[in-house]
Image (cartoon, rainbow, N blue to C red):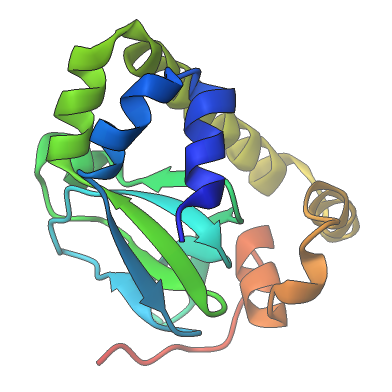
Amino acid sequence: MSKNFELYLTEEVLVSISHLPMLMQTISTDTKQKNEIIVSKDQVDHHVFFVEKGLIRLFDIDEEGNEHTILIIPENQMLFNVESCYFGRPSKYFVEAIEETELILLGPKFKELANRLGNEFRNYNEFLLYTNLEKIHERINVLISLNKSDKESYFSQKYKEIIDRIPDKVKDSFMGFKSHNHQVI
C-alpha cells in the first residue's frame, strides 16, 4: 500500500533509499470510506497524512451548519493540521475522506527518525510549511478578491485533474458559496 509514498520520499523529499526500510517500519496505514471523518474538530491527532490513493479535505462547519472547505488534498500529497500535529492542541477543523481513501499515517516516531537520519526531511518539512503558507495566502486572495464566475474558473483550472471526483457541495464550500447544512453527530 505504500508504493506512492516510497516514491514520494525518494523523489520529492530526497530521502536515501538506504533509509527507506527503517522509515517504513515507523508508519501505519488506514483506509477510510467515503465521507468518513478522519479527524474531528477538537480532537488532538499528531499524524501527518499522506494520501496514497483517494481524496481528503480539511473543513469547518459554522454556527449555521454551513461547511467551509479549506483544503482539498489528492493522491501523493500530505496534509498536516498544524495546531494538532505540531503544537498538541485540539484541531480547529475536520478532516474527511471525500472518496474511499488509503492513507499513510506519519506519527511522532516517523518524524523523529526522519529528522535524525539527515537534513533532507528537515529541509523538506520547512519547504512544506512555506508551501502551505503560500496556499493559504492564495486561498484568502481568491475568497476575498474574485467574483463567483472567476472563483469557478480558478477552481476548474486548479483542480482540473480531479474535478470530476469532487462533490458539488465540496466545490461550493471551497469557493465560499453557501453549502448544504451539515449535521454533526
